[in-house]
Length: 355
Ligand code: NAD
Ligand code: DAU
Image 1 (cartoon, rainbow, N blue to C red):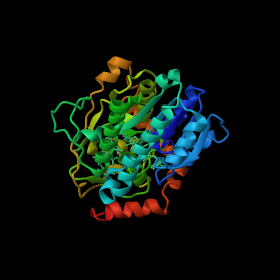
Image 2 (image 1 turned 45 degrees about the vertical axis):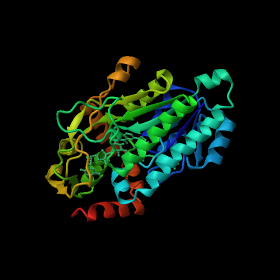
Image 3 (image 1 turned 90 degrees about the horizontal axis):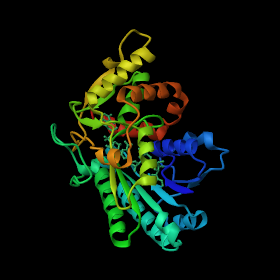
Image 4 (image 1 turned 180 degrees about the vertical axis):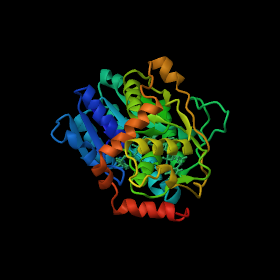
């Protein structure tokens, strides 16, 4: 079996659901259900014995060691993190705790467990750490996309905490030979993404007749990757990646934010037109920029494409259409995740921006 952390969040949910459609290998899912974790995402697995959910914190060494000893996983995939840049700017402490201390505790307990394994299992064991392109900093237009050798230059408390965790992963391989793998991917989008992130926030605000907030001039560029393509890449790296290596995963879909917002508005105009004859783009509102806002991310995925044969299946056009349709078809999920704490966050983040 394998152990995943953060499997009730956006990418983790998609990964767990995908895994169990493709394999009968059991998954232990360790998640402490922060505001971003939602067990409802995994309701379809309620009676599925292949999915064992444990509510717990990756900082809890005693719990992790007991899980490792009890279930003896052949691999660990670490998705668990505080993941929202704007929250890291408002309140960085939790990012240091989960992303740095949590990764450290996972590594330490894994090192202890791995040391007890018999040779064959020791050799086959893998620890796969899910990281981000943000650790590389910001590109200007015309600069080469990030490859795996790009210097680390994180600019936000979030990306700095992820960079620190990547360095710990690297050090555990270099010092202890722990068979680790790291993936650094670009912006994911797709089903189950919490509506604090750009694409689901725009869909949710559009449908409730609220302003569609675009930071600064809206010309910041992100490289969009459909979440199921990311999950395929993770499975491939887990099975065929070389220990100690890093693989960058991107969608080859560099788009300015304002274009993303217009694309979502146009899709909604077709799939769910406003009843008053107006167009959704009329709700777009430019607001105060994110402090330290990175201008451009772009990923060079050649290594994973050439060495492991990965290729994304979705174009941005097909992926975004599926995503908007998923949110339209899952209105009860959308409503259920907009709790009181969600509304508090929205007030906190957008009031100061002039909304
Ligand atoms: P998310 O915020 O949607 O989910 C994070 C999950 O981790 C939640 O279920 C949460 O409950 C859980 N969690 C948080 N702290 C925990 C702790 N201390 N112990 C146990 N569980 C904890 O995040 P996501 O978008 O699914 O991102 C998953 C991973 O991928 C993160 O490591 C993130 O840095 C990375 N990543 C995300 C993107 C993206 O575009 N979403 C891109 C690149 C990398
Ligand atoms: O690049 C990978 C990263 O992508 C991941 O590591 C992070 O976990 C993930 O959250 C994401 O970070 P971003 O900051 O790029 O994602 P976000 O959806 O928050 O913002 C995308 C872009 O849209 C960014 O340039 C900021 C802008 N934006 C965002 C929000 C929430 C707006 O213009 N308006 C908004 O309301």
